[in-house]
Image (tube, rainbow, N blue to C red):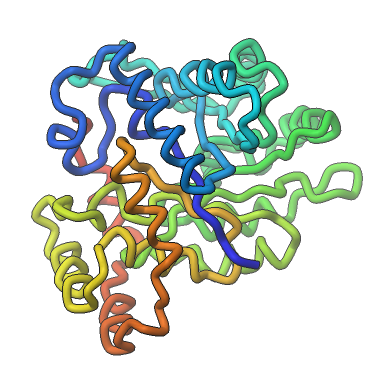
Length: 319
């Protein structure tokens, strides 16, 4: 299996997020119309680069709405759409909101958010993920919830989970144990994997072996592994120096390493303009066999303990 690039709208369809360099990349004008236009620009660029998978979520501001409008304007577009439920966007389109999203994995939340997704996208979504499934929310042990999700699966929508946090591997392995009417329930796994936080790799390999599709999110670590996005992180600065030594753009090198994972089905770009999307897509042309082995070894040595990585990520400001 050869992984391809997908496009995620987490960073472009709402005014605030944790990605490095947002002031530089988005400026101060972040009205609904401005970000709608930018989202369409990103989608146009992605499809032109051969992208055929789009990732949205109920909590990504107006991502579903923006995508639906783009799909209406491009009736011939051949893209697969994955959305997510389990967080509500509550940021009121402000960059300085005290809280931007609220997590809720109850059956009530699922029913309400599925109805909203259907109202926005109609039948134009192919995958529905539980957003940030973890062991402590109960979503992976709630058999009544599994029955509800299986009903959606049986309608033809692929059901999956996304994961976050230092125990991603535990959540993935628990999800692979869940069967309803004898069939694996969760057949799409979307997880953070990058050279700074590769701990979910073995579990993702197990998921692929079990027949699930694996989607890699945050391959550039929310901008830390993108040009100019190191944000004072010593480990990210080391990665930038290694990319320069290899003569490859940092984002391209980071994404190329993710694309090379044999278990990956799609690797998501989080680009917020056409240039970023094209740069990310160029990772497909990076031949890692031509990169100095010592550089790749040093890059892999930058992996941080999961607890350290996620603590730092949680501390990042929304802007």
